[in-house]
Amino acid sequence: MFAYIEKIKEISNRLLKESTVDLIIGFRKGTVPMMNEPCFAKTPEAVDGLVWDSNCGINLANYLANRKEKIGIVSKGCDSRNIVTHIIENKIKRDQVVIIGVPCKGMIDRHKIEAMFDTEIEAVTEADGRLNIKGDGVDTAIDKKDVLQQNCTICTHRNPVIYDELAADLVEEQTDVDKYEDIRRIEDMTPEEKWEYFEDLLSTCIRCYACRNACPLCYCPTCFVDESQPQWVGKSQNPTDIRTFHFLRAYHCAGRCTDCGACERACPMGIKVRILTKKLEKDCLELFDWESGLTLEKRPPLDTYRPDDPDDFIK
Amino acid sequence: MSNWEPKIVSFLCNWCSYGAADLAGVSRMEYPPNIRVIRIPCTGRMSPKFILAAFRQGADGVWVSG
Amino acid sequence: MGIEPGRLHFSWISSAESVKFVDVVKETVEAVKALGPNNNFIKTTAKVA
Image (cartoon, rainbow over all chains, first blue to last red; front, side):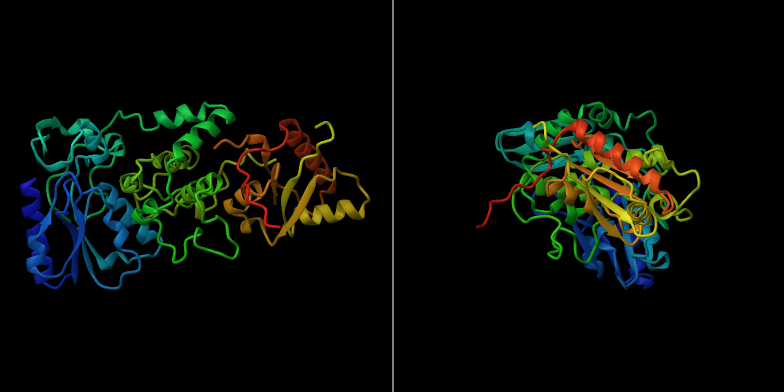
């Protein structure tokens, strides 16, 4: 990990010194363990604070939309796919960003680690795929691969898809992963079972909109939940409103979502919100042969028409 | 229960199905009275929001027709 | 998502196809009738007098 950090710092300093970019978006250590925070570095001192480890799950592409300055951005596989989506959607220009690609081996899920121990975790350090967990009366090591975010375990695009600089050698991509096992299980349910399932899934939602705020796709100036005329969704903790919010948000991400897991990571209640976006991701793959954020050449399925688009659902 | 009739919210495109509905009316054709027609300027105006909004407000079915 | 597939219908009818229009209306009403009333996804609000 140290090699990564040194290389990121070196590239960042060079880009800033040559005035190729006005700022670098990267990660610095957060105030609590397992929570790195995004950092906008404009000076060499700020660059010194940049880090890279397995707690960089936040999707930095979120901070690019509508920016005017030239930006260097630290970007793992999923971030880079979201940058592609941003460029396609004209949220940022390609020549405005210098992408510092960071091949990624998965981010850890702090919910999983917190659930393993009764006490508060005070420090987590990592070395060679092992994590050392320290807390009150706890000092133990676990395998990193056991506590990866679920989307990282099934990720097939660990390397950035576009980049200008590279912080390390490309890593081997995972193949033979069954991405949609859980989605297929839900698809096989009867309508009643599905209703129960989603009731249960979303029952703990507190409508904090953390998922929306963490999502790089959710850049609408006014989100549909905040619109009051017409009011699509009520403001209260009503189960129907909660459902409407989650379903509509998922639909807005159809054909755009890269399954980066930022929403699920941000959820304070640990709701598996990715189930909804993943179903649409699966549909896009099966119906339109589309995986979002892989190329700048093609337009996404929802804004193109092809005569062979599937239309069996129309009478 | 036996005399329950469904309420179906229909979103009809101004140029296609709305025209067809008009023609059906002009031709004095009979069809079930369960549909509540909402005219939209084009089926391209359709959004998932509309469908969910209809169900939220108690529609038994939704029909979108271009 | 817990709404029966038969509750949501899509069709494509030209403005000249009034016969098809009537057929589709009948078909749709039959399909929804067969499913019975929709109880899910309705937002119940307190009635304000």
